[in-house]
Image (cartoon, rainbow, N blue to C red; front, side, top):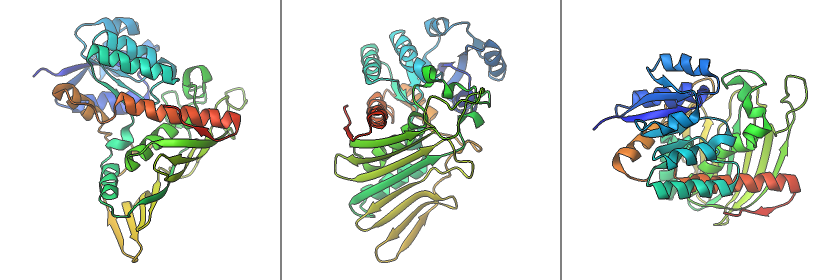
Length: 347
């Protein structure tokens, strides 16, 4: 079969480090088109892939030779670009968070269903072999019934990773990003909590603060650089989540799950991917595979899964419904922080 021909919208670091090289590495796909508002940036990236640079998003999406589109542009564009591409008959891989509002995620899913095309969301942590192994162990009952869960994602902030490497990054622009650390890092952790527990969040109480991130003129940014949440899953499991853009030490991307037979620590110790400590003092270690950090990017698996879903016609591992449900928790968390109260998650 011919290769899946892919166009990528947005030529920042997520494209340069993940989407473009992983499509190229997949024997069944190729990058043929790129767009970025910074045309020189797009041309520079295109030179390494033999791709065509388009002057507008509309021109790229209208090209009948393109089979699929990756949406790697700012959060505010996720819904309109995805819907435009789906309506043009393209399969879509959209980066997280899926959109800004739940009304938009519903429109995205409706567009995918009407077009009969794949809509996948870039929650890549559930593709990691370590998280998949952890889910398998949890489902086997290794630590018994889950009682509570704690998950963290803390690094030094997007200005150290994004393409312009400065505090003028779009991640700090409220109009483009809409969410701060809660939407950026919380999207990963809330999705992996849903994945590992095979459960949904029932209610949430969240606090957001801005402690250190500033605009070039010295003002604190309008978005949160730290967020903490406590929540209940529908099954009754109690959880906590902490995300931060102000961790200037070693990146923390850990999850600890407490069961009535023991404890599972995932990426709690970089020397061991999973550590299980049981009630009888048995300690079991599983070395499955490292997790990507901003300093060391590893293959995500998200691109391979997307391409395979296009070729086989199966549902992707991360569906539009997954993106919608994760965003529902983020939206509830953001509202909870603003109103300073517990809120039910409205799906």
